[in-house]
Image (tube, rainbow, N blue to C red):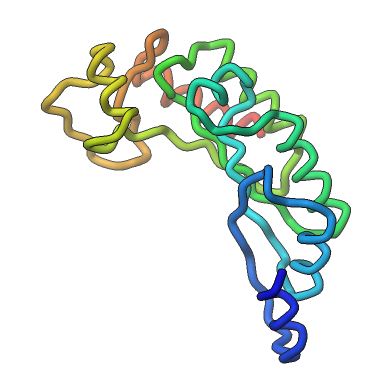
Length: 168
């Protein structure tokens, strides 16, 4: 908010966008962001399944995502919601929950990404432990799934990603 007030006090008249967690936005912060020229906020919603949010230790609840999008809408700030499908515990039900949640949130923009188990991360350890990736894996692009889930193949994840984007 101090940065927003400084932008205003210097009469900079700039247009800008921001990334945010859904649990850090409130009425006052959104007010100052809008007043300082913020026109869009990207939100890491990640999943429409509370079970998956808990498993990935996101530390948010679905209601916080709803509230963040509504606050932005109230202040006429565009929203870009980011979702991830393909966590080790994702199955047809949880992926469909994410798709339905994205539609219900009705952000201005949405994208569905696939998680990538970078070396040394907890996600890599989990993926190796459950044999969702091999030790010698090769991914050509981040748009391709790097691993299966416990319930879905990489091919199914690609189909879900395409379906999710078309559905939205």
